[in-house]
Image (cartoon, rainbow, N blue to C red; front, side, top):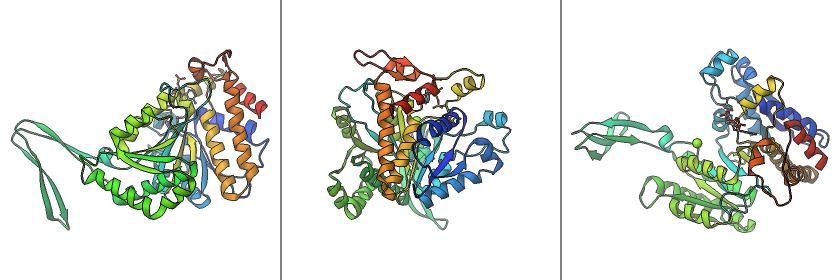
Length: 395
Ligand code: NAP
Ligand code: MG
Protein backbone atom coordinates (compact mmCIF):
# COMPACT_ATOMS: atom_id res chain seq x y z
CA UNK A 1 0.00 0.00 0.00
CA UNK A 2 1.08 3.56 -0.61
CA UNK A 3 -1.82 5.76 0.57
CA UNK A 4 -3.31 4.76 3.94
CA UNK A 5 -7.00 3.96 4.39
CA UNK A 6 -8.89 6.10 6.85
CA UNK A 7 -9.84 3.55 9.50
CA UNK A 8 -12.84 4.47 11.68
CA UNK A 9 -13.23 2.07 14.59
CA UNK A 10 -16.62 1.68 16.27
CA UNK A 11 -18.63 0.04 19.01
CA UNK A 12 -19.83 -3.17 20.65
CA UNK A 13 -19.91 -6.46 18.72
CA UNK A 14 -18.78 -4.89 15.49
CA UNK A 15 -15.74 -3.45 17.31
CA UNK A 16 -14.89 -6.98 18.46
CA UNK A 17 -15.32 -8.30 14.91
CA UNK A 18 -13.26 -5.38 13.54
CA UNK A 19 -10.14 -6.50 15.45
CA UNK A 20 -10.67 -10.13 14.47
CA UNK A 21 -11.04 -9.32 10.77
CA UNK A 22 -7.83 -7.28 10.82
CA UNK A 23 -5.86 -9.92 12.70
CA UNK A 24 -7.18 -13.02 10.94
CA UNK A 25 -8.04 -11.91 7.42
CA UNK A 26 -6.04 -8.82 6.53
CA UNK A 27 -2.78 -8.27 8.42
CA UNK A 28 -1.35 -11.74 7.60
CA UNK A 29 -1.74 -10.97 3.89
CA UNK A 30 -1.50 -7.19 3.43
CA UNK A 31 1.13 -4.69 4.51
CA UNK A 32 -1.76 -2.63 5.85
CA UNK A 33 -1.47 1.14 6.11
CA UNK A 34 -4.24 3.04 7.88
CA UNK A 35 -4.78 6.39 9.52
CA UNK A 36 -6.68 5.32 12.63
CA UNK A 37 -9.59 7.20 14.23
CA UNK A 38 -11.38 5.74 17.24
CA UNK A 39 -15.08 6.53 16.77
CA UNK A 40 -16.03 4.29 19.68
CA UNK A 41 -18.56 6.13 21.85
CA UNK A 42 -16.11 6.57 24.77
CA UNK A 43 -13.61 8.36 22.60
CA UNK A 44 -16.24 10.46 20.85
CA UNK A 45 -17.31 11.60 24.31
CA UNK A 46 -13.73 12.22 25.46
CA UNK A 47 -12.97 14.33 22.37
CA UNK A 48 -16.33 16.17 22.36
CA UNK A 49 -17.02 14.36 19.08
CA UNK A 50 -14.04 16.13 17.44
CA UNK A 51 -12.73 12.71 16.40
CA UNK A 52 -15.72 12.19 14.09
CA UNK A 53 -15.09 15.50 12.36
CA UNK A 54 -11.37 14.74 12.02
CA UNK A 55 -12.12 11.30 10.58
CA UNK A 56 -14.55 12.73 8.01
CA UNK A 57 -12.00 15.36 7.02
CA UNK A 58 -9.35 12.67 6.66
CA UNK A 59 -11.72 10.76 4.36
CA UNK A 60 -12.06 13.86 2.18
CA UNK A 61 -8.27 14.28 2.12
CA UNK A 62 -7.25 10.64 1.51
CA UNK A 63 -10.29 9.59 -0.55
CA UNK A 64 -11.05 6.13 0.89
CA UNK A 65 -12.32 5.24 4.37
CA UNK A 66 -13.54 2.08 6.08
CA UNK A 67 -15.92 2.44 9.01
CA UNK A 68 -17.08 0.13 11.77
CA UNK A 69 -20.70 0.40 12.99
CA UNK A 70 -21.11 2.96 15.78
CA UNK A 71 -23.68 3.65 18.47
CA UNK A 72 -25.95 6.63 17.88
CA UNK A 73 -26.62 7.62 21.47
CA UNK A 74 -30.12 7.92 22.88
CA UNK A 75 -31.13 8.69 26.50
CA UNK A 76 -30.38 5.13 27.60
CA UNK A 77 -26.86 5.26 26.08
CA UNK A 78 -26.15 8.60 27.78
CA UNK A 79 -26.73 6.83 31.07
CA UNK A 80 -24.99 3.56 30.13
CA UNK A 81 -21.79 5.39 29.05
CA UNK A 82 -22.11 8.41 31.37
CA UNK A 83 -21.91 10.75 28.35
CA UNK A 84 -21.39 14.51 28.55
CA UNK A 85 -24.23 14.89 26.07
CA UNK A 86 -26.33 13.02 23.53
CA UNK A 87 -23.87 13.20 20.63
CA UNK A 88 -25.26 13.27 17.12
CA UNK A 89 -25.21 10.28 14.79
CA UNK A 90 -21.62 9.87 13.51
CA UNK A 91 -22.97 8.76 10.14
CA UNK A 92 -25.01 11.96 9.93
CA UNK A 93 -21.91 14.04 10.76
CA UNK A 94 -19.75 12.22 8.21
CA UNK A 95 -22.46 12.47 5.55
CA UNK A 96 -22.77 16.20 6.16
CA UNK A 97 -19.01 16.81 5.89
CA UNK A 98 -18.52 14.56 2.85
CA UNK A 99 -21.85 15.79 1.35
CA UNK A 100 -22.42 12.23 0.27
CA UNK A 101 -25.06 9.74 -0.72
CA UNK A 102 -25.42 6.24 0.75
CA UNK A 103 -25.57 3.25 -1.59
CA UNK A 104 -26.67 -0.15 -0.31
CA UNK A 105 -26.05 -3.43 -2.08
CA UNK A 106 -26.92 -6.99 -1.03
CA UNK A 107 -24.10 -9.54 -1.05
CA UNK A 108 -25.25 -12.48 -3.16
CA UNK A 109 -24.19 -15.99 -2.30
CA UNK A 110 -25.25 -19.33 -3.80
CA UNK A 111 -27.54 -21.19 -1.41
CA UNK A 112 -29.34 -18.09 -0.22
CA UNK A 113 -32.00 -17.38 -2.82
CA UNK A 114 -33.80 -14.04 -3.00
CA UNK A 115 -37.57 -14.13 -2.53
CA UNK A 116 -37.94 -12.76 -6.07
CA UNK A 117 -36.86 -15.72 -8.17
CA UNK A 118 -35.62 -13.65 -11.12
CA UNK A 119 -33.17 -11.50 -9.14
CA UNK A 120 -29.88 -13.17 -9.96
CA UNK A 121 -27.77 -9.99 -9.65
CA UNK A 122 -27.74 -7.52 -6.75
CA UNK A 123 -29.93 -4.42 -6.87
CA UNK A 124 -28.23 -1.36 -5.40
CA UNK A 125 -30.30 1.40 -3.88
CA UNK A 126 -29.26 5.06 -3.77
CA UNK A 127 -31.32 7.09 -1.34
CA UNK A 128 -31.29 10.88 -1.34
CA UNK A 129 -30.60 11.70 2.29
CA UNK A 130 -31.82 15.30 2.43
CA UNK A 131 -35.19 17.02 2.60
CA UNK A 132 -38.72 16.10 1.45
CA UNK A 133 -40.95 14.78 4.27
CA UNK A 134 -37.95 14.31 6.60
CA UNK A 135 -37.58 18.06 7.03
CA UNK A 136 -41.23 18.92 6.52
CA UNK A 137 -43.43 21.33 8.47
CA UNK A 138 -46.91 20.05 9.29
CA UNK A 139 -50.07 21.62 10.60
CA UNK A 140 -53.64 20.60 11.52
CA UNK A 141 -56.32 22.86 10.03
CA UNK A 142 -59.85 23.42 11.34
CA UNK A 143 -63.11 23.59 9.44
CA UNK A 144 -63.57 26.93 7.70
CA UNK A 145 -59.84 27.72 7.55
CA UNK A 146 -57.78 28.21 4.42
CA UNK A 147 -54.13 27.30 3.95
CA UNK A 148 -51.71 29.14 1.66
CA UNK A 149 -48.19 28.61 0.46
CA UNK A 150 -46.39 31.93 1.07
CA UNK A 151 -42.91 32.87 -0.14
CA UNK A 152 -41.12 35.91 1.30
CA UNK A 153 -37.92 37.77 0.61
CA UNK A 154 -36.37 40.23 3.10
CA UNK A 155 -39.56 39.92 5.11
CA UNK A 156 -41.80 40.92 2.20
CA UNK A 157 -44.34 38.57 0.70
CA UNK A 158 -43.60 37.87 -2.94
CA UNK A 159 -45.85 34.89 -3.75
CA UNK A 160 -49.04 33.40 -2.29
CA UNK A 161 -50.81 30.26 -3.54
CA UNK A 162 -53.96 28.72 -2.12
CA UNK A 163 -53.40 25.13 -0.95
CA UNK A 164 -56.99 24.41 0.10
CA UNK A 165 -60.05 25.97 1.73
CA UNK A 166 -61.25 23.46 4.30
CA UNK A 167 -64.96 22.73 4.75
CA UNK A 168 -64.02 20.10 7.35
CA UNK A 169 -60.87 19.66 9.52
CA UNK A 170 -57.76 18.66 7.60
CA UNK A 171 -53.97 18.48 7.51
CA UNK A 172 -51.24 20.25 5.56
CA UNK A 173 -47.53 19.67 5.04
CA UNK A 174 -44.80 21.90 3.64
CA UNK A 175 -41.63 20.29 2.37
CA UNK A 176 -38.59 21.42 0.47
CA UNK A 177 -35.38 20.47 -1.23
CA UNK A 178 -32.44 22.46 -2.59
CA UNK A 179 -30.85 22.41 -6.02
CA UNK A 180 -27.39 22.08 -4.44
CA UNK A 181 -28.41 18.94 -2.63
CA UNK A 182 -30.06 17.44 -5.71
CA UNK A 183 -26.98 18.21 -7.82
CA UNK A 184 -24.65 16.60 -5.28
CA UNK A 185 -26.98 13.59 -5.18
CA UNK A 186 -26.97 13.25 -8.98
CA UNK A 187 -23.16 13.40 -9.18
CA UNK A 188 -22.76 10.86 -6.37
CA UNK A 189 -25.13 8.49 -8.17
CA UNK A 190 -23.41 8.83 -11.53
CA UNK A 191 -19.93 8.43 -9.94
CA UNK A 192 -21.03 5.32 -8.09
CA UNK A 193 -22.60 3.84 -11.24
CA UNK A 194 -19.33 4.37 -13.13
CA UNK A 195 -17.32 2.91 -10.27
CA UNK A 196 -19.52 -0.23 -10.12
CA UNK A 197 -20.40 -0.41 -13.87
CA UNK A 198 -24.13 -0.31 -13.15
CA UNK A 199 -26.86 1.26 -15.27
CA UNK A 200 -28.95 3.85 -13.43
CA UNK A 201 -32.73 3.81 -13.11
CA UNK A 202 -34.22 6.89 -11.50
CA UNK A 203 -37.93 7.04 -10.77
CA UNK A 204 -40.01 9.97 -9.45
CA UNK A 205 -43.50 11.32 -10.10
CA UNK A 206 -43.00 14.31 -12.40
CA UNK A 207 -46.37 13.80 -14.14
CA UNK A 208 -48.13 14.68 -10.89
CA UNK A 209 -45.47 16.84 -9.23
CA UNK A 210 -44.79 19.15 -12.15
CA UNK A 211 -42.40 21.50 -10.33
CA UNK A 212 -40.97 19.51 -7.41
CA UNK A 213 -40.27 16.07 -8.85
CA UNK A 214 -39.81 17.59 -12.28
CA UNK A 215 -36.84 19.60 -10.95
CA UNK A 216 -35.16 16.36 -9.82
CA UNK A 217 -35.69 14.90 -13.31
CA UNK A 218 -34.35 18.02 -15.07
CA UNK A 219 -31.26 18.35 -12.85
CA UNK A 220 -30.36 14.69 -13.34
CA UNK A 221 -30.84 14.99 -17.11
CA UNK A 222 -28.73 18.16 -17.32
CA UNK A 223 -25.83 16.76 -15.25
CA UNK A 224 -25.95 13.44 -17.09
CA UNK A 225 -25.83 15.08 -20.53
CA UNK A 226 -23.13 17.63 -19.74
CA UNK A 227 -20.80 15.54 -17.53
CA UNK A 228 -21.47 11.81 -17.76
CA UNK A 229 -23.08 10.71 -21.05
CA UNK A 230 -19.81 9.91 -22.84
CA UNK A 231 -18.28 8.25 -19.75
CA UNK A 232 -21.36 6.03 -19.44
CA UNK A 233 -21.15 5.10 -23.12
CA UNK A 234 -17.48 4.13 -22.72
CA UNK A 235 -18.35 2.02 -19.68
CA UNK A 236 -21.23 0.30 -21.54
CA UNK A 237 -23.90 1.47 -19.10
CA UNK A 238 -26.92 3.79 -19.47
CA UNK A 239 -29.07 6.24 -17.54
CA UNK A 240 -32.87 5.99 -17.61
CA UNK A 241 -35.50 8.18 -16.01
CA UNK A 242 -39.04 6.87 -15.75
CA UNK A 243 -42.00 7.13 -13.37
CA UNK A 244 -41.48 5.57 -9.93
CA UNK A 245 -44.35 3.10 -10.42
CA UNK A 246 -42.86 2.06 -13.75
CA UNK A 247 -39.47 1.45 -12.06
CA UNK A 248 -41.21 -0.68 -9.40
CA UNK A 249 -42.78 -2.85 -12.12
CA UNK A 250 -39.55 -3.09 -14.13
CA UNK A 251 -37.49 -4.03 -11.06
CA UNK A 252 -39.75 -7.00 -10.35
CA UNK A 253 -39.34 -8.29 -13.92
CA UNK A 254 -35.59 -7.62 -14.08
CA UNK A 255 -32.69 -9.91 -13.22
CA UNK A 256 -31.21 -7.12 -11.03
CA UNK A 257 -27.80 -5.60 -11.60
CA UNK A 258 -28.92 -1.95 -11.66
CA UNK A 259 -28.61 1.10 -9.45
CA UNK A 260 -32.10 2.19 -8.39
CA UNK A 261 -31.99 5.89 -7.53
CA UNK A 262 -34.68 6.93 -5.04
CA UNK A 263 -35.91 10.16 -3.55
CA UNK A 264 -35.66 10.24 0.25
CA UNK A 265 -38.95 8.55 1.19
CA UNK A 266 -38.91 6.08 -1.71
CA UNK A 267 -35.39 5.06 -0.68
CA UNK A 268 -36.44 4.55 2.94
CA UNK A 269 -39.15 2.09 1.85
CA UNK A 270 -37.38 0.41 -1.05
CA UNK A 271 -34.05 -0.21 0.68
CA UNK A 272 -35.75 -2.26 3.40
CA UNK A 273 -37.86 -4.06 0.80
CA UNK A 274 -34.85 -4.94 -1.34
CA UNK A 275 -32.66 -5.87 1.68
CA UNK A 276 -35.30 -8.24 3.03
CA UNK A 277 -36.01 -9.76 -0.37
CA UNK A 278 -32.31 -10.64 -0.69
CA UNK A 279 -32.02 -12.30 2.73
CA UNK A 280 -30.29 -10.83 5.78
CA UNK A 281 -29.07 -7.58 7.34
CA UNK A 282 -25.72 -9.25 7.86
CA UNK A 283 -25.37 -9.52 4.07
CA UNK A 284 -25.95 -5.88 3.14
CA UNK A 285 -23.02 -3.62 2.30
CA UNK A 286 -23.09 0.14 2.28
CA UNK A 287 -20.91 2.90 0.90
CA UNK A 288 -21.06 6.67 1.21
CA UNK A 289 -19.94 8.42 -1.99
CA UNK A 290 -19.28 12.15 -2.16
CA UNK A 291 -20.04 14.16 -5.31
CA UNK A 292 -16.29 14.62 -5.88
CA UNK A 293 -15.68 10.86 -5.74
CA UNK A 294 -14.53 10.08 -2.16
CA UNK A 295 -15.64 6.75 -0.66
CA UNK A 296 -16.49 5.54 2.85
CA UNK A 297 -17.31 1.82 3.15
CA UNK A 298 -19.25 0.17 5.97
CA UNK A 299 -21.74 -2.58 6.84
CA UNK A 300 -25.41 -1.60 6.64
CA UNK A 301 -26.24 -3.11 10.05
CA UNK A 302 -25.65 -1.67 13.52
CA UNK A 303 -23.38 -2.70 16.39
CA UNK A 304 -25.41 -5.90 17.11
CA UNK A 305 -25.91 -4.98 20.78
CA UNK A 306 -27.69 -8.17 21.83
CA UNK A 307 -24.73 -10.29 20.70
CA UNK A 308 -22.27 -7.94 22.42
CA UNK A 309 -23.97 -8.31 25.81
CA UNK A 310 -23.83 -12.11 25.35
CA UNK A 311 -20.12 -11.78 24.42
CA UNK A 312 -19.47 -9.72 27.58
CA UNK A 313 -21.01 -12.51 29.65
CA UNK A 314 -18.47 -14.88 28.11
CA UNK A 315 -20.97 -16.61 25.80
CA UNK A 316 -19.93 -17.66 22.30
CA UNK A 317 -21.70 -15.56 19.66
CA UNK A 318 -22.41 -16.36 16.03
CA UNK A 319 -22.36 -12.88 14.52
CA UNK A 320 -22.24 -12.49 10.76
CA UNK A 321 -19.08 -10.61 9.76
CA UNK A 322 -19.67 -10.67 5.99
CA UNK A 323 -20.91 -7.09 5.59
CA UNK A 324 -17.99 -5.78 7.70
CA UNK A 325 -15.54 -7.86 5.62
CA UNK A 326 -17.10 -6.28 2.51
CA UNK A 327 -16.45 -2.84 3.99
CA UNK A 328 -12.75 -3.74 4.16
CA UNK A 329 -12.61 -5.38 0.73
CA UNK A 330 -14.49 -2.47 -0.84
CA UNK A 331 -12.01 0.00 0.63
CA UNK A 332 -8.93 -2.08 -0.24
CA UNK A 333 -10.16 -2.59 -3.81
CA UNK A 334 -10.81 1.12 -4.26
CA UNK A 335 -7.38 2.01 -2.80
CA UNK A 336 -5.76 -0.52 -5.13
CA UNK A 337 -7.61 0.93 -8.10
CA UNK A 338 -6.75 4.56 -7.25
CA UNK A 339 -3.09 3.84 -6.49
CA UNK A 340 -2.59 1.33 -9.31
CA UNK A 341 -1.76 -1.56 -6.96
CA UNK A 342 -3.26 -4.57 -8.70
CA UNK A 343 -2.19 -7.06 -6.02
CA UNK A 344 -4.20 -5.16 -3.43
CA UNK A 345 -7.41 -5.26 -5.47
CA UNK A 346 -6.74 -8.90 -6.34
CA UNK A 347 -6.34 -9.79 -2.66
CA UNK A 348 -9.67 -8.09 -1.83
CA UNK A 349 -11.36 -10.14 -4.58
CA UNK A 350 -9.76 -13.31 -3.24
CA UNK A 351 -10.96 -12.55 0.29
CA UNK A 352 -14.53 -12.04 -0.99
CA UNK A 353 -14.40 -15.30 -2.95
CA UNK A 354 -13.08 -17.13 0.12
CA UNK A 355 -15.94 -15.77 2.25
CA UNK A 356 -18.56 -16.74 -0.35
CA UNK A 357 -16.98 -20.16 -0.81
CA UNK A 358 -17.05 -20.72 2.96
CA UNK A 359 -20.81 -20.14 3.05
CA UNK A 360 -21.49 -22.09 -0.14
CA UNK A 361 -19.68 -25.09 1.27
CA UNK A 362 -22.05 -25.00 4.27
CA UNK A 363 -20.10 -23.08 6.94
CA UNK A 364 -21.91 -19.97 8.18
CA UNK A 365 -23.18 -17.93 11.12
CA UNK A 366 -26.53 -18.59 12.77
CA UNK A 367 -28.50 -15.86 10.99
CA UNK A 368 -27.97 -17.56 7.61
CA UNK A 369 -28.83 -21.15 8.63
CA UNK A 370 -32.64 -20.86 8.16
CA UNK A 371 -32.18 -19.14 4.77
CA UNK A 372 -29.66 -21.62 3.36
CA UNK A 373 -30.77 -24.18 0.77
CA UNK A 374 -28.15 -25.82 -1.40
CA UNK A 375 -28.64 -29.32 -2.71
CA UNK A 376 -26.55 -31.88 -0.86
CA UNK A 377 -25.05 -29.35 1.57
CA UNK A 378 -26.07 -29.44 5.23
CA UNK A 379 -25.34 -26.07 6.86
CA UNK A 380 -23.05 -25.96 9.90
CA UNK A 381 -23.36 -23.12 12.41
CA UNK A 382 -20.01 -21.60 13.39
CA UNK A 383 -19.13 -19.09 16.10
CA UNK A 384 -18.02 -15.59 15.14
CA UNK A 385 -14.36 -16.58 15.49
CA UNK A 386 -14.64 -20.01 13.82
CA UNK A 387 -16.29 -18.46 10.76
CA UNK A 388 -13.41 -16.00 10.30
CA UNK A 389 -10.82 -18.75 10.74
CA UNK A 390 -12.63 -20.88 8.15
CA UNK A 391 -12.47 -18.00 5.67
CA UNK A 392 -8.74 -17.60 6.36
CA UNK A 393 -8.25 -21.30 5.54
CA UNK A 394 -10.08 -20.77 2.26
CA UNK A 395 -7.92 -17.79 1.27
P1 NAP B 1 -28.42 -3.95 14.64
O1 NAP B 1 -27.16 -3.75 15.36
O2 NAP B 1 -28.35 -3.95 13.15
O3 NAP B 1 -29.06 -5.33 15.12
C1 NAP B 1 -30.42 -5.67 15.08
C2 NAP B 1 -30.58 -7.19 15.05
O4 NAP B 1 -30.37 -7.65 13.73
C3 NAP B 1 -29.57 -7.94 15.91
O5 NAP B 1 -29.98 -8.03 17.25
C4 NAP B 1 -29.52 -9.27 15.18
O6 NAP B 1 -30.68 -10.07 15.44
C5 NAP B 1 -29.62 -8.85 13.73
N1 NAP B 1 -28.29 -8.57 13.15
C6 NAP B 1 -27.83 -7.36 12.69
N2 NAP B 1 -26.60 -7.51 12.20
C7 NAP B 1 -26.26 -8.79 12.35
C8 NAP B 1 -25.10 -9.54 12.07
N3 NAP B 1 -24.03 -8.97 11.51
N4 NAP B 1 -25.07 -10.86 12.37
C9 NAP B 1 -26.13 -11.44 12.94
N5 NAP B 1 -27.26 -10.80 13.24
C10 NAP B 1 -27.33 -9.48 12.95
O7 NAP B 1 -29.50 -2.84 15.03
P2 NAP B 1 -29.94 -2.26 16.47
O8 NAP B 1 -29.89 -3.34 17.49
O9 NAP B 1 -31.20 -1.55 16.18
O10 NAP B 1 -28.86 -1.16 16.82
C11 NAP B 1 -27.74 -1.39 17.68
C12 NAP B 1 -26.86 -0.16 17.70
O11 NAP B 1 -26.33 0.06 16.41
C13 NAP B 1 -27.59 1.12 18.10
O12 NAP B 1 -26.86 1.78 19.11
C14 NAP B 1 -27.61 1.95 16.82
O13 NAP B 1 -27.44 3.31 17.11
C15 NAP B 1 -26.43 1.41 16.05
N6 NAP B 1 -26.55 1.48 14.59
C16 NAP B 1 -25.45 1.88 13.89
C17 NAP B 1 -25.45 1.89 12.52
C18 NAP B 1 -24.21 2.33 11.80
O14 NAP B 1 -23.23 2.67 12.41
N7 NAP B 1 -24.22 2.32 10.49
C19 NAP B 1 -26.58 1.46 11.82
C20 NAP B 1 -27.70 1.03 12.55
C21 NAP B 1 -27.67 1.02 13.94
P3 NAP B 1 -30.77 -11.15 16.64
O15 NAP B 1 -30.67 -10.38 17.90
O16 NAP B 1 -32.13 -11.73 16.40
O17 NAP B 1 -29.66 -12.14 16.45
MG1 MG C 1 -36.17 3.04 7.21
